[in-house]
Amino acid sequence: MNPTAHIAFRVAAAFVVLGLGGALISALVGLVLSNAGPAASTSLSLCSKDGVVPAGGKDYLAQNNVWNAETPQCITVGDQSLRIESAAHDASPEGAPAATPSLLRGCHWQECTDVGGLPVQVSAMPRVTSDWVSRQVDTGVFNAAYVVWFHSGPVADGTPDGAEMVIWFRSRGGVKPGGVLLAREVPISDARWNVWLARDQGRVRVTYERVGEATAVKDLDISAFTGDSVERGLVSPDWYLIAVEAGFNLWRGGAGNAIENFSVSVDDQKPRRALGTSAPAPCFAALSVEETWTGGFRAVVEVTNVGDSPVQGWILDWTFPDGQHVEKTSVGQATQSGSAVRVVGSARDGVLEPGKSTTFDVVGTGVSPGVVSITCTPA
Image (cartoon, rainbow, N blue to C red; front, side):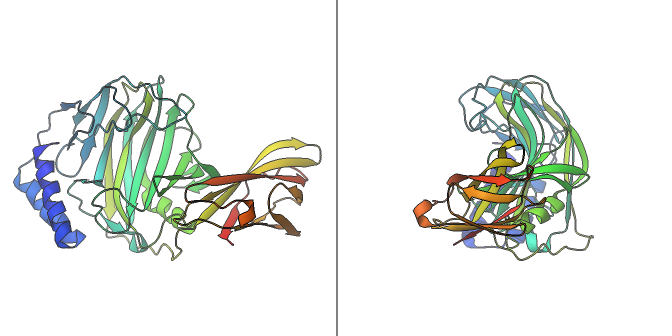
């Protein structure tokens, strides 16, 4: 770790123990970094698997972040820029990536920048935007994405305990977001996004997968994505947005990918927006059509427990768009009134532990319903 960043972190950690507030901690960390003098504008090489260094001043950090492999990787870090020089990874695309080299503003685990403007509480969030210009190769297995971290308090002394929000722009090698598909082509920040939900290490992970590739964005409205996640019950208004990262998840290869510029802006002059009062939902469900024939279809519904306690039973409610009718389900009891459908599952259909999923078939009449929004409520 860079000595200046290391000192700043130790200052922050010490005052967390003393119980001081996030704003005071940010000010003290900024004082340590500013007294250390300006960062050099020249680039440097970073090859240690968990190495973290300033990326042009005290406002941004770069991390090599080889967290799921022992294979070597080296990056070159400049002023709000990063280039992957070498990466010898060969992880299976079916599992977690080998590494996530990235630039960040805010706090990633114990590593913090001079977090002017961050953290911000979700319930009173100003407009948070980001610019990102990247150069991406066409070989290997990787994706290019933002990761936005939420935590229950303004400072995360360790792993964030809120949500992980991924904004996915481009991928190679066939990798796709994990979890269940909640919605298709949702319009946010001048593009359309498919919305996925998963649970990872106790956290909710919501992924916005861009429809159509992009290697650069300007004024990406992170507060708008946050608002959508709040409306879906995935992010609590009581949580804090503590960090914004941009980089690459690498499974195989990855050398040549680069971030040419990255910045995050928190506009305190804009009116703060109320983002609702809903708490994170304890369960979610998604319907995927698997087969169609003349006058009918078969769909699979996946129910996932994204809460912290076992789900003994669940109630699913949805509305069919074009007069479809449920003939039978393989699990639970289905009722239908007009286009409104309710399926009730009980403990005898299987208790869902936190992070676990179950699936069942729905056979219906009519044309394929496509993506259907489902409300899941524990019974």
